[in-house]
Image (cartoon, rainbow, N blue to C red):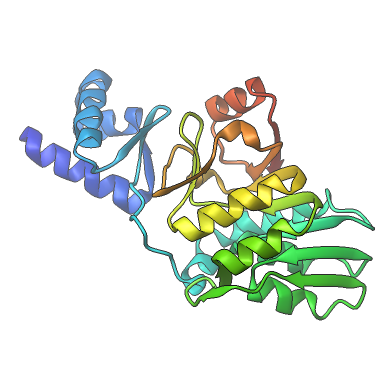
Length: 253
């Protein structure tokens, strides 16, 4: 197989599977792992993929927000498990923040009807919580993003700045241990940074496919979060490095 053909097939595999390991690519193409690493280095320089711990991950599209309907079915089982675990960290009397992620919506669905205050920029979260009489819901308002059914922009940012919460529960597009947290839309990234700023604790709720990826807009460095809630497919290297940064990691099963 020609080198150019192998490179094309590597990119196709990464885009199809979201992520793939060096060891697996070595077996598929019957070349050494060192050859694959050189391939990945070249392809990363061409912005065709991103290298990660032990492999490569798909490049996120810049400035493109995935529709809510699509996000709702992507890794749904993992997101529901993460949401169920996240609810264990929410207690009666808490003042919390839920972003506009589908995982936050699953948290809203799982929350018992107990005395809580919830600040959110999500229409879906607000509607879900409206069914629970003891939960006080504060919606940020702002400019509506129809794809994610969320509010962003200066009005949403001013609204968020008026409050203080015990805990923020949010998600994002990319989690890179060196480059930090990122999202595909700048207005979402700016608002999520502000959400983290008003919270005593920030819980990042992400499925394992998000690790090692970087989206268009930077949110914050990784050390700005207090805990990560993810699924059991997260690799050992990521788990070890998060613990070395004194970031709690909770595994949903």
